[in-house]
Image (cartoon, rainbow, N blue to C red):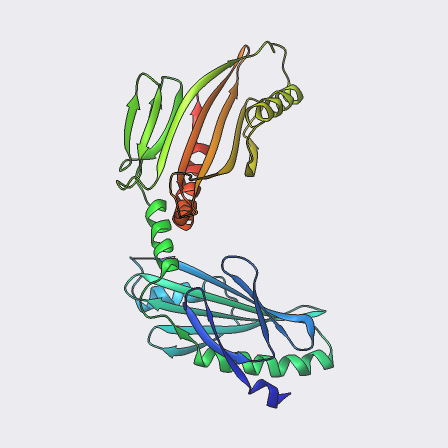
Amino acid sequence: MKKKLNNLKLVSLLEKTVTFDMPKNWQIKQKDDTLFVITFPFGKYPSLDINIEFLDKPKLNSEKEIQKLLLEGTPDNYETIKKDKDTSFIKYKVQTKEENLKLWKVLNFNRPRGFRIIRLSLGWVKNEDADRIVKLIVEEIEKILSRIIFLKGRNKYDNLAQLENKLENLQLTEQTFWDKFRLSLPVRWKKNFDKQEQTIFIDIDNTNKYQLFFEIMDVKTNKKNYNERNNDQLINKLIEKMTNEIFYEKQSLRKTDNENYLFSFTVKELIKDNPGKKSALINKMWYRIRIFEEKLMIVSFIFNYEDSLTDEGSKYSEKIDKLISNSHII
């Protein structure tokens, strides 16, 4: 087995954010955007989970603060290893009555403001045979970590972390629209009001790459004696009617109380006026709904961008979703 472990192959993850060599008979698969799983030549169990996180922290630059980030969420029984001036890792073990769990956390400082964190976890059932096999795996993992190489400079994942930090720290101001709807929006986002159409257009980043607009409408209803069950039925029928001829995905219906609902979904639309290039428009849509005695009041939002901007657009969508979730129909 030791002979096989010395037969190595080179692996790069997430646009060469991290590169390392590992035994050729180990297999690696990507489970989601930043999660990978390594399996070994003796079956699906145990397996090594690898999670990669990107952070943008412009104010975190002292050795003490960086060490605090490395040790965050770590028990007392850790061991720290300094690989180079910008990369350190810790390792520790968690034991239960039936299982062992070996964990590593690697922190890379991508100067001047970026951080990459890699978390590795290896769990196995306690018994002599498993312990003997895992001992060789652990030795190899620690050799890998001693040779691990991080990308110098930035890639799209570092840029997305910076965008996420920027969106998280935007200054907000609450505004009232149509004397009926309260919504907090970033001060830097410019607002244009189309009085004729009663529509609000939001300029997010001065590039016209992203379009956000919203409008208000009333829907009459005869339901006077309503209760929670009837409200849910009414909203479900409304959603069914509004989306009847639309192929949508990633739908979500949230209920804040007996009268307030938020329905969201995504629609992909092919761009036909672009010959020779296959592209689509991503439309993220929200319906903020409140039930009154004789009507429903709906504020509808549409945020769209081309599918080539999916990563950045998803970050903006998450921010907009938070803003709409905290809005109020008066």
